[in-house]
Length: 189
Image 1: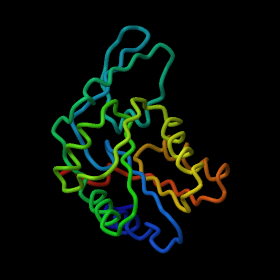
Image 2: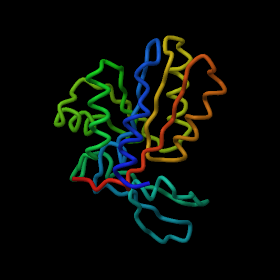
Image 3: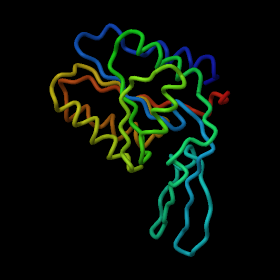
């Protein structure tokens, strides 16, 4: 799908007319922003290499792999992904509740970036864990509270999207929409 069509598709699928209280959840890295942050991996043989967040999203962990996420304690040359940030700003302007749900260990760099783009009051949850189940657990907690009719989840990781989408069977009274954002379709500028 070309970039223009993908952008139009994402904009068109945001559910605005759904009745009741809605929550939109956005991933941070490679969904709203690109950075120069890397994940450093040392495999069981001692060989070291690095992965971008996009590469890590599809990386299949092997026994003995050790990961270093220290780059994610700060923002390294953040570049907003303009079309997803535009969607986020549109949702915020319409008054919908929004949460940034990140695998990062600390919230401060994310809050700083949100302030810089004019969205200082968005809640940020830092999970300090890249396991897709942790994001699904957070979404399940919000769905179980019983006060939401719709949860819409945006993430670049297919694994995270699948983990959240699987919750629909568990919470049939809450419409759960999990959308994979193709971060490679837009050059960060």
